Image (cartoon, rainbow, N blue to C red):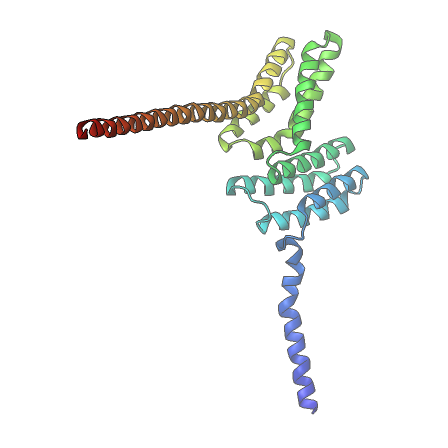
Length: 257
């Protein structure tokens, strides 16, 4: 009896340690794990200046990403993992201000929104804000121009991870070059030129979408018109055939008389 009890206990202990790893990572592999909620929690903790807790939460996010919780190409997945790791270090850095850390946390939120939602409303709103900021800077007077310019640079930098998730990898180089150029500008005219370049950098994405819509509308129009023409030709041919058939029957009756 004692032997059976020890054997049962041994089986229980072995089962516990075998199943424990699955339980630890279950939250990151099952669909019940809400990645976006965790990312928003990171932002809230950062906003409350709880940087240690935010960094630990990002570690969980990193595990979830590594467990293929995001449906993105491999090169973008690697970029997302690197971005999460970088922000995790930034949150614990003494060299960054609280505002800088909030911007970093916000960049992760926007990146994950772009990765999980094809048309994220938050990301679209932020892009619209950036466009307004660029136009506002271009229209501002000389006194306010420089301040607005650097605000634009900060907003652009916050959006870069999300832009990279949204755009093809071939566009990433031009984004990095643009940010580097804007950060090293001191001349008023060159700053203005950079703002115009920035406008054209992400607006083609919207234009491309419109062109795709126009193409689909054009195809639909051609198909409709083509279908109508084909139907009309078939109907006219059928009517002609019926008319000829009736004419032959009448002709046969006349010959019979």
